[in-house]
Length: 357
Image 1: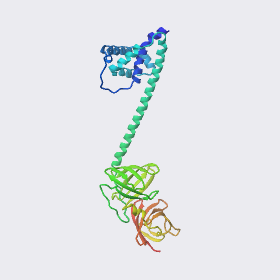
Image 2: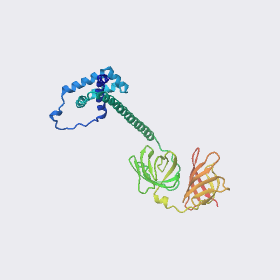
Image 3: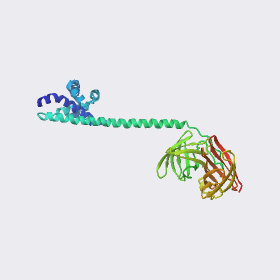
Image 4: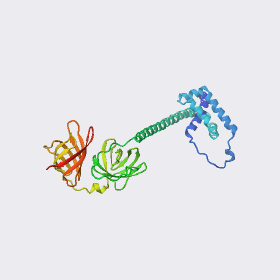
């Protein structure tokens, strides 16, 4: 039995040594150095070893053994053909060190098991690497597709502007101070645009890093957490609308300076009766009461409304049976009238109000 294993197993064992060598030996960079006499490659030894390996690959018992361990024969032949002369000599040295006697059968069997495990591990690693590369390619393609969509973005029609109009640079429309007028907070973004890059300045309430695509800005907002956001600018460059993580929506309006947003006069003048006109959906008598920043209609009011005041500014909603309407008003300097707009399903309508009591 031992003789049979030695006779049948040694050719396979030789080839297994070669395959194990291919899997385990890393590719080494070429280095320029003096070559000693004993390290000079003997062309005849290289040729003889190549012939031996090719003869082994042609044997049916060897091929059957490799297949039984799940080894791809075409891949094995390709690896043999790609071996360098130096690698061939290392295989030759390994062959010359084969064990003799009764240890051969045990050693060969153990080598076959180890080799199979190494090959399976290498295949799993290759599959993992391939999966990572494939996933990376898909992510890159998705990002590239999104960027192409962003580049096609165009500004949305600007809403009527109420109050003073700040300066605008068409070449750097995102540069400036932007106050949140509709959203979960009323903070201020102070942005600086350079080319297609937009970053926040130290005065900004949020740290922002973003990139411009057409009329859209896409980037990251840093506060307590890192959040992705995107927004699109209006065609007058005085406001923009966006979302954070595709969940929280907000609207910003450009103002002259951050101090203009911070140093507003105390609220308190929105309470009273107002004769509103400009849209049949909201025209009539509004009766409002105010508690701090909160402004809400009374039961006597023609319409049910609620908003948030910030000095001369009031933004909120008119509650209707079918759909709510958002509004944005600016109070006059004497506090006896206001102008603004309201978003209806058919578009934005200008609104005005006069205090009657």
